[in-house]
Image (cartoon, rainbow, N blue to C red):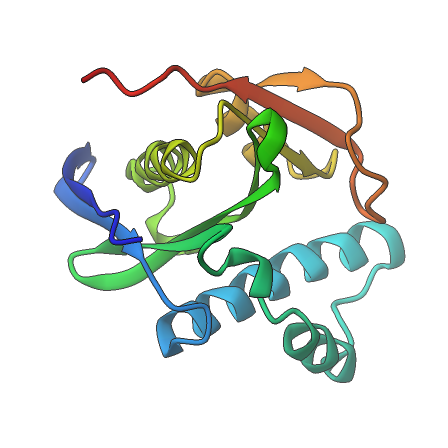
Amino acid sequence: MTHTHAPTEQLSAGGAVSWTVGPEAVGSPAAAALWRAYYTEVSDRYYLLHEGRTTDPEELEREVAAETGDDLRAPHGVLLVARCGGEPAGTAGVRMVDAGSGIAELKRVFVREGLRGKGGAGVLLGAAEDAARALGARRIVLDTRLDLVEARALYTRHGYAETEPYNDGMYAEVWYAKELAPVAG
């Protein structure tokens, strides 16, 4: 898949910010660094909330290494990397979970902390939805945790609605879905 999302200019307090989004190999240095940043943040947040500590470094290394991202490889998935001013800044993955009913799952939505609030997450979601359509999806689903309130607000702002559980993931506490309108053409 050679799907790319056109550069998008988003205004921020500091002026125009240029975002581009395109597919990236799961094992690329940019994808690996973004996966590590994503996992570190969500894991630390979980442990700080529930146990008052950050993630044990050995656990972090074990979990980062264990998640190969194979489900985000063609032909049934894609990993997208957003770049801000050309630098890797965020990621989103899409994988087909049920091709027969046209259902894709959104995974690993993340924007680096210093670049949040500058439009990148919305650009990533739009590109992920386009990628899901290109994979044949008519509906996109995701799961998240209740404490990730910023992510939940983002999904709601972009038309995702809470739905019934579709999996029993260990950290899945709330599920969202969005019907994907066909690409106008």
